[in-house]
Image (cartoon, rainbow, N blue to C red; front, side, top):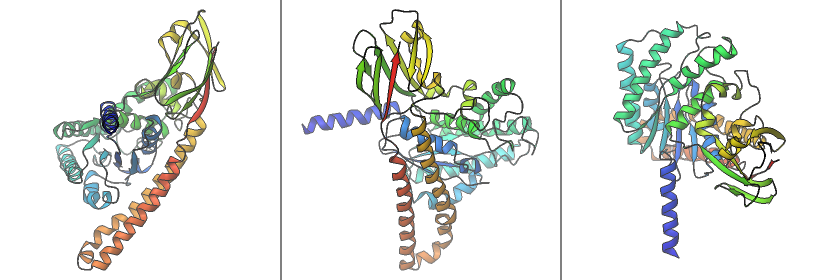
Length: 413
């Protein structure tokens, strides 16, 4: 029995590595970057995805965004600030400020590379084994006014290439934030108008639409596989569901499920830049990261109506036999309320993390000499660190309370 349990545990660990090889068991993920990270949008989407959409609750996330920061700024605070969390996985997103809002020069590239090396070396020294090295994002082709948008995007593209080179050199993954945003913006503006901002109303702090693109790039950089689940509804036989989705009742043309793995959910507006849904037609988030597949067997008609929760849509027999992506096809889902509640709790947690790091922990760096010569003072600082993390863990526990099974019904007629 002991050997069997050990074999099962090893098999589970191996499957986690194969499916999500940057997120080993009990991964501790630090989301690191400048003011765009401190907006706590893409970091919130990443955390929600890692907890709810993978079905794993062994993952812990902490965001370390700092407004106005360059890679060198984080390198200076890296050891002190990360010491409270001790991450094993990290994402980094620098370059927007490192480009200095001018045309690219070799000096800008050299400074960025030097400081990114300090960051990557520092993370390695801290014991961070897996890193998604992110490129900088992009600036909006209409709303960025600090400099000519095309010229600054060229600057950011050079920094993207440096980040990619370093990721390869250090044996780490690369998250192509820049191209993900540029490609979506090139498609979205002709469809929704030039006033549809992809990179923010100020040109470089994106709204939820742009942050979803950033999350997409980082989740791919973290090697997320994207299969939320598969439900096979058999009209003339037994229906089945993949791991994370338990069929609690089944009758002709209908299954009721209890799902502990959720699809990623979006808000409702299909056109506004403050809407995550509005950017979906111009990127591959659902196809690559959010596949919640319904396969229907035993159909005798050319078409059928699928009802999921309160919404219904019609599909062809061929579509249903091949499989439809419920997360992409249905603008409202039975998971929406639970997902919104989860995002709210994560937002509160990450807001505390910003306050904790910027207002308290980072200042301990300036007290190093005093701490070295005064054991009692050093012990007091350690107590503050522990108390701060205990408060953060309360917020984290509040997030995890939201990760409950969602009951929902799928009907085909």
